[in-house]
Image 1 (spheres, rainbow, N blue to C red):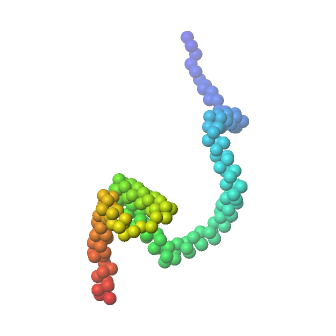
Image 2 (cartoon, one colour):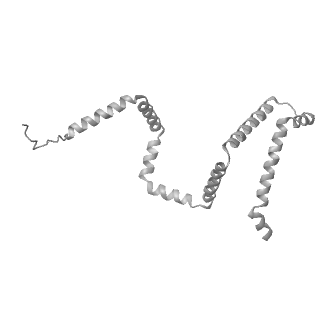
Image 3 (cartoon, rainbow, N blue to C red):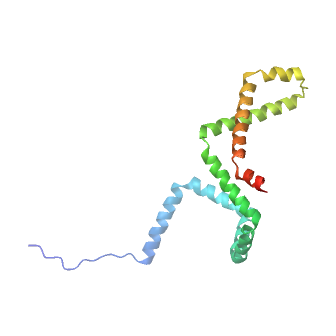
Length: 169
């Protein structure tokens, strides 16, 4: 019959073996991701040449003073308005349907392109040419959109709490 196992030897790697294993794992990852590592090194080299690391090191060394200056700047009344306006801008963009926003930005881009082309051609616009353009479907659509925009903006202004304050003042 077999003898009973009375002792179990657990092999614990020594520090040198652990370091060798860690080095092997790191080298394996480096070789598998060579392109990413090389790109990261190039990026860090560029940042170093620009002096970004020196500036960051200086900011870290003087973090107490830098933090105090940042807080002083944040506590100025104009900064409160900047923060509020930024938050309102983000809320506004979040409230718009993405399809409408895309259409609006595309229309603005096309409008700026056409305006630039007309300016480069240097053609003089007679009243007769402008009147003919007003009859085009594109102009009618644009004018109708602007009229609806102005109507909505006017509705918001009419409901504005500032109007009630103006009456009191």
